[in-house]
Length: 170
Image 1 (cartoon, rainbow, N blue to C red):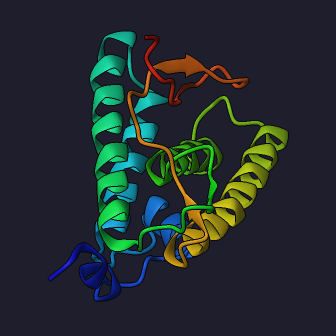
Image 2 (cartoon, rainbow, N blue to C red):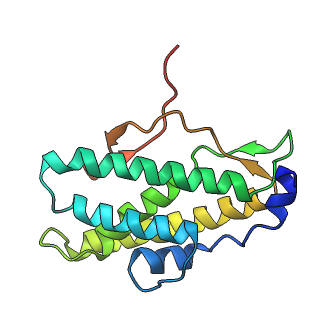
Image 3 (tube, helix red, strand yellow):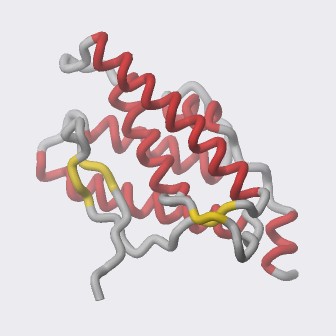
């Protein structure tokens, strides 16, 4: 069985609605992508309440999960056409960002003002739409994603450490 034959027999990828419901703990369907998203959600919720000493272990586990998602996506999506556009981030990184914003929007805590929660929910919806587009383009071969070389953590605008890709310098 060739790689592309295996890909045509692969299960359908879940839509962002299922991912968000899994991240929020409202859905327990078994699927590799949903399983990883649910675990990422618990890690991001833990990040909001943990001391700095635990953050390194949490982020290392987030990296492993993002890479596992990317490996799964590589197995189940067809090879893109040579002239396919290249997306700026992998599915694993996009799901990690979605889990981060869901944790900020839906994890109870003393720092969440109504304005901040609304902003975080808006980000969740925007990321969900982008993720649906990315998954659709990947399954039709219209798009490709970068190879992950590493995910160093940097602070985003909200002060939350986010995983981003950076190619190692030669």
